[in-house]
Length: 145
Image (cartoon, rainbow, N blue to C red; front, side):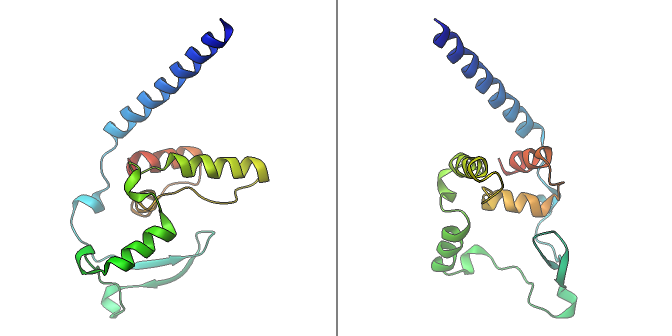
């Protein structure tokens, strides 16, 4: 009897969390950079602490022009996906398996050992900068979804 009640509480909590996430996804507008077409933004290179290392601007004649996916060889796309987001085609923008792995590693080592961001989450983070907080991470996940 106690096990059944605990299972119902857990299932209810999970359902409430999922509903909250779905409502947040429905309310979050797409970043303007995704809806305004190609831009001529500079490419900024940051270190792991977020400090600017270098910036390449299109008007300086540096290589920062966009390339369509159709022009990239398939092996380049495969290599990026293998390195950055192996299950890219199998998740909706957030990878729950990667999140579980990274969470378990953080608990075991008592520090962050690896990340769980998908390519879609990385794009969301670059288009809509966020604070490095739990709330910011949730917003990144909502935009990715």
